[in-house]
Length: 104
Image (cartoon, rainbow, N blue to C red; front, top):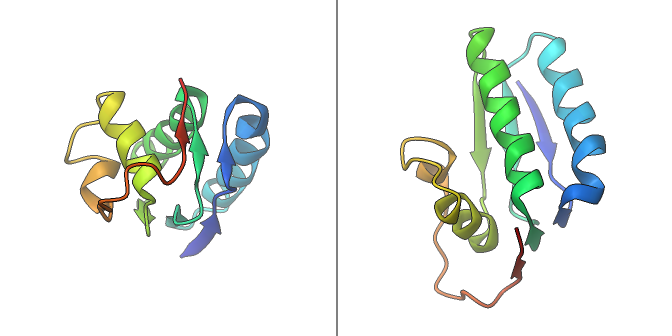
């Protein structure tokens, strides 16, 4: 299993670089664990990268899970309609809703 930590800013300006890293891990054929604890700023492009990773993993019968999901990312996943049985199910909820910016 490969673990990759997401950057603090998971936005359109970091999405391509993040996707390359996630894709390389998936291309290696290993299950992927994404550490999302440090995400403090996310937009729809950032969420899209995570959904692409999840889709690619599922297509290749690989595991792909989020660990340590920040409250900001959990809010973004919910706001963008990611079902509870998706990444949001592994989100650690935090009562501090003002811990970062959600834009998208």
